[in-house]
Length: 146
Picture 1 (cartoon, rainbow, N blue to C red):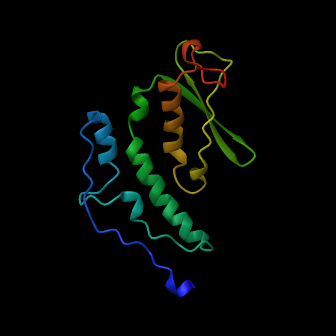
Picture 2: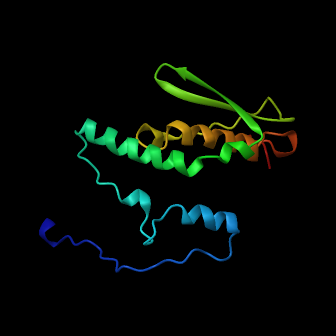
């Protein structure tokens, strides 16, 4: 039966950036592709699951790409972060400037950072979450919030 399993071919095409979104959102999407329109994160040659050193090389390249993508963003964020380590996990505890409800917290479990997206990019992501989504009484993120 396996001899008859076929894959799906998708012809090459260009998908335009949506014009219905903000210029800032368009810029974010634009940073995800190279000059020829190819997704940057699809250009890595993936090593075999057993190739630890190969994965660490890909991780270093991806982490450098993500760090470059967020460079300078934290300067505009009204939040601070403390980085702590619990056993082997790196945790960024970000706090918004100004008033917020200390009874609530946002927990962003970024499982992808086990391989990609950790480091500086993950820290800036935490700062961004605290800046844009403070847990204020008017906008509390809890199971009882409407």
